[in-house]
Length: 75
Image 1 (cartoon, rainbow, N blue to C red):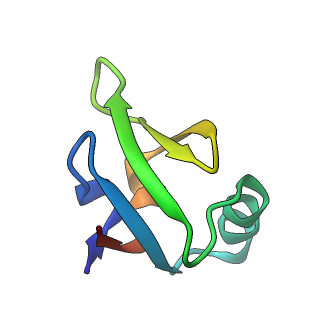
Image 2 (cartoon, one colour):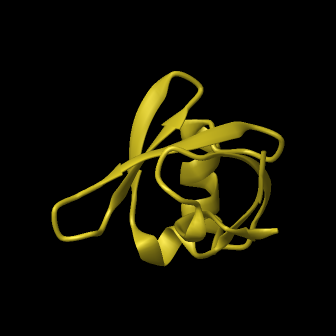
């Protein structure tokens, strides 16, 4: 188990849990970032934050601060 922000670029992981405040958690759920969903880390912005992730066919940028609160398991 690790945090979403620790997933290497190009790696795929499985969401285990989201430990964030209810506002961000609800937003993540709306974007499809829910437990048991596969997420692939694609690339980082030039300054290193945010990182783009492939989630259910969509590319979503997530800030490091928020990604730290998402527990994942590398596949």
